[in-house]
Image 1 (cartoon, helix red, strand yellow):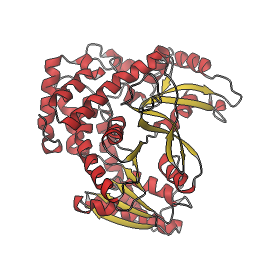
Image 2 (tube, one colour):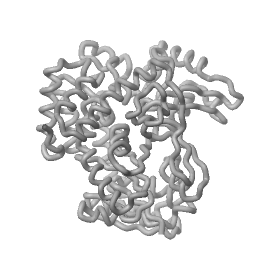
Image 3 (cartoon, one colour):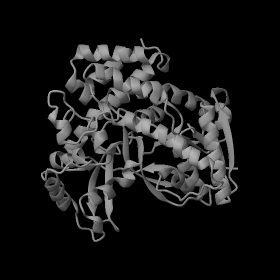
Image 4 (cartoon, one colour):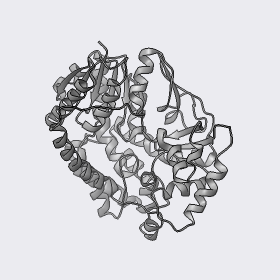
Length: 441
């Protein structure tokens, strides 16, 4: 029986979506879905919801559960695919620490899960757990494909790709929705059908390099005109940072404006507080989302528990489509996060984890060479890659100096704080995280 293991299955909504997608696919619906988590209550809830879904859809799937580190190898043994969606340290205490400690030093964040000091700390507490996953996988399922959904995407996927023997691809939602959201936001819905596009860069800062309508007409001149017009209208809307990217750098990027507001030195600046209102930047956005999601799930689970049925419609999420493609040999194209070791993007370093078009078939995930990025886009990516590579270095070497260096070179942190303050903030964060982090020299 085909075995698909879900690490972090207590992420009930996401587990439900990915495994529900698999249950809607003929070649995957009768698989064993092995659910692993360290939280027994959330694991039980996921199994209950997925059991309802299996019954409603009438599929032969087998749902098994594995609780705790002592059962991790059993969860992984014989898996062909391993989906990763963990959050080490959860919202409370670790996300709270990631926001509140920097705030004492005057450093404000929006999401803090991908870059910035919050992204650095999240990677440092997650990489050791992924290292444990990899050791177990090398023993009990060495040929499995690891589908990583956990942030910070480039740091975690890059670690797995460089320092373990596990085949890994990082997957994000932002590539699929990038151009559709842009065209709808600019009133260009009539150009959606049959459009062709090229996206490449790094996770959360992949660039929409080319977009054409079904007749091959370049849409960027009109996109640039309308984006500038909307920015200058005085209207407040939710995507102002990315529209400003179009104005300043010539291209739109994959991830939302609330994310990209903190990936650079331009928009969140304590000496220019008016920028927060000007670009409609939601500070402390991720903690608000966490609180709302926690409360929302309690309400949703209570409602679901009263129902005997739970249906599902297959989504555009990449995971099930990748598995289907590998199992059946049917080609599929994704935007995947892979190692740049073949210079897939010529003007980014080989060690970087890049986001490029990838062909999927029975051989696995096959990345495509995209050549060089426009120099300004590569330069923007490099400000993030510097932090990613130093954070991975810190996790591998356990040298505290690399954590300091990652924070110093982070564009937002380095533009707001002096070096001595950055070092003190990092020390405070390490102390506040306690046993959630390994010891550093």
